Length: 110
Length: 117
Image 1 (tube, helix red, strand yellow):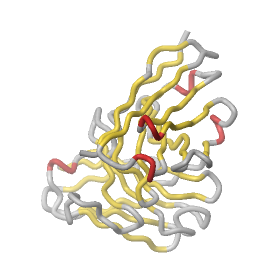
Image 2 (spheres, one colour; image 1 turned 180 degrees about the horizontal axis):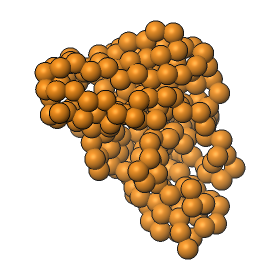
Image 3 (cartoon, one colour; image 1 turned 120 degrees about the horizontal axis):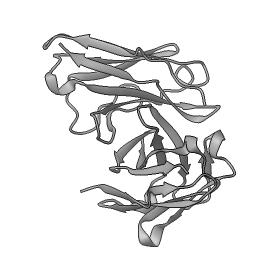
């Protein structure tokens, strides 16, 4: 299975904004508006934060936003808080493997 | 409350079999595609398989095709993952999840599968 590419780690101070990228191909990220993002705290199940590139499910803070340009999707966390420290994964529908996940990004709040 | 609860994980020898179950509650189960997603120790997420509302369509990741079988019982609000010919590389936490807008919401708490002699 082909994984989408994410930076291994991103860090920021409380109150700052950070952006996590998710790079794919024309067969996944670039070909469909079916990118989703997940937050996972240690020992916990993943939680959906963004669906269909930029839609926030009910209950997700508006500090989380998503976008896409070409073959790269992005998750931005604004007003960074201590509770945002977690691993983040992107996912996309893929014409070749049905669903692909990103390699994961560890967010550290300094 | 929308909830998914997995069961059936455990320790199995290479070449052995295991059947995972996922019980759903709080929503109309028969209206949704359902998925299994796994996470190897210290690794990232990996989609394994999904199944259509009526069970008529099933999709699998390449490395489990022919070894894993996804199924569902809408009368019991449950779906399953039959895992045969297990390999060490199948060791992971297996999550069940409801397909939602080309993603997954919610997820179960996960069940651990360890393949080792």
